[in-house]
Image: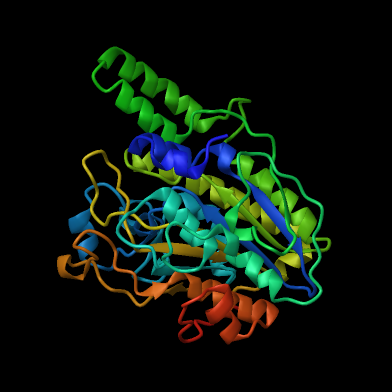
Length: 389
């Protein structure tokens, strides 16, 4: 099996493809006391927060993007007069209106500058700061949360794929499960194929046409969004029992080219996944918090391939009946050239770990000192953003 370190040494475009490969998607569970539920979704591939939650009220956005993040006048859904929701997330609008969906913008882990998918994902899941390579002996931040909670038990679960998610690895017992993996052409694999056929117009056009079909359907002819739905339903079934914490990953967020098509599909799958959680959890949805996080954001400027490259500041999604939604949390830095990080990326103004930390505090009563010193070493929680009811 391929290790992350082996893949990291591969060609950059091949690494992008592998980082979001379906065989690297896993799902993990653990049992804890109490009635509150926490679901953490890792969005592998670096989601473009500026397109998902579009700050159309910032005049700098149009100067940076010619075709992306079009705003409410071209299909995005106005949220509050400044931010607009990508139209592919329109199925989640009822959750926003019910106060069960919110976002945090201009957020990032402490990871900076190198912009490697694998290191970025390691830092996100380890939660221990900017220590690359990550010390796997410390495990992931959800595992450290479990170690700090009394009465934790492991529930039987299963794993399919090349590795277990780092976020729940560690001393506390937690097993894993994932549905059967199927090898279909991912959006990132398509980028590699584009490079291979770049100088051959005959094969390039034929491959592009075939990929359009492959991106819409998996190898079994089903919607690719159904992978997330299956993960969500299995997770919800466990959460309706003894399980109180679940974590899984969704791939396909690397959008160097043709971002409009690729992001529309992945966001549609994310919406289906969240709605599947809500439906399957039933009354327990009211006690559930869903946090969807990605390793880093993307460049503020659109590139020459109608996409965006690896960046820094991004956005996270929070959903659930326990969430105080209907709000975008942000200390907005602005999109003027002198406000961008390294004059290319959205400037992070808050550590994304702080939102996860305050969720732990509200859901499980975890002490702030424990969060800052052990679960997220070096984190300054800062003021309570009041993301929970």
